[in-house]
Amino acid sequence: MNPLAMMMFLTSLAIGTTITLSSHHWLLAWIGLEINTLALLPIMTKTPHPRAIEAATKYFLTQATASALMLFSCLINAMQAGEWDINTPSNLMMNSLSIAIMMKLGLAPMHFWLPEVLQGISLVTGLILSTWQKIPPMILLFQISHNINLSLTVILGLTSVLIGGWGGIGQTQIRKIMAFSSIGHLGWIIIILKLNPQLSLFNFILYTIMTTAMFLSMIMLSATKMSQISTSWTKNPALTTTTMLVLLSLAGLPPLTGFPPKLLIIMELIKQNMFISATLIMLASLLTLFFYLRLTYIIALTLSPNTHNSTIWRTPTKPWLVFSIINTMALTLLPLTPAILLT
Image (cartoon, rainbow, N blue to C red; front, side):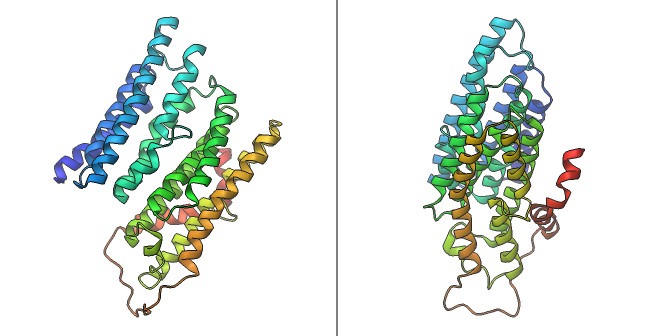
């Protein structure tokens, strides 16, 4: 793709996100989401492959459906309340609006588009879709969190964690595994949204950091399948080791970065006397833990035959400083958690 065109599309992504984040008007927020969607479509199809075209078509149709439902809900709110302000939604439109935003995020049971779309695009575009594209809808959910339906968030959160773990178990493609991982993590974020928005935001930030680290690792290793990461040890032992640790961090094992949000969410659910929800989400997360551990086993405890230990590691010239910072944050933020939560 022409670098100038690529720069224009990335700038449009940034502008769309900024408009949504800074708006207090439903129409402006909707326009920002539309700019975001339309800017990502050419990036998804920059490799003219049938799978990429199919992924872009599925993404467009899903986002267009969610946008239509969101605009319809906002029109009902404007008709009832007489204004478009984000902080004054009516009860009638709140459920439909929440479902529209959650469809944009890829929460279960509106998740069917996410694994297929992520599988059809490149790793770099997958990184943008899994992190940057989640920011505007998530910020809108944070803004309306005080009016959102608690039963809806709990049911969709539990369903997403269950589907995220169940769907990822039989996968061999890393991009599909990351898609189901994203669905599971969003379930953890959503289930606590009404009760403690600050904790949801904290969880979302850590999810973004860990997912970015994992995608960057896959980009560095040029790996899209399990069979490819099983041979990565001889190419770059240090990178393979950190990739394994990032996977364990995504699984939520202590003492890594992924552990504090899960612990704090369970504690908050227990504090709110939601013992059944806390038990169910912990049991559902065991499914997710299984496929993370399977990936870790393939990376660390298997070695492909007919490979030799190279004395010179084949390390291509890539932005190692950025990668090192992101990886360090994805592994070592546990001791800083109290300080972060108090600020």
